[in-house]
Length: 122
Image (cartoon, rainbow, N blue to C red; front, side, top):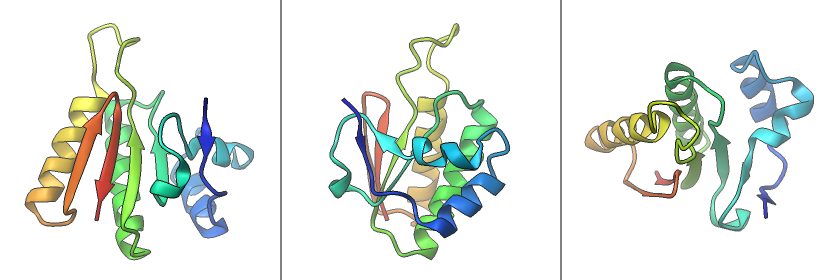
């Protein structure tokens, strides 16, 4: 069952579409969802399914910058488990490494990782 977060604000939609050439504006709402925890527990979410490692890391960087700018406290990043990847998980370990670096730089306070989903606390 998929729980949808509240519709992204127009400013976020505009920025997200500008930085996501493969996503049509009508599909932006589809990119912000979560399969597990109700949306009231986080403020924004990003689903990275279908992105390359480089694209995914760019999206994570963008979302973290956006979250800091908007003073969000909790965001979700969905990488998936990597079960359909021919060489095993790619996005999950890459995003985990990026978040560990952000934590070392004190740009995030902490994060949790479970079943292909990161909960990030700023």
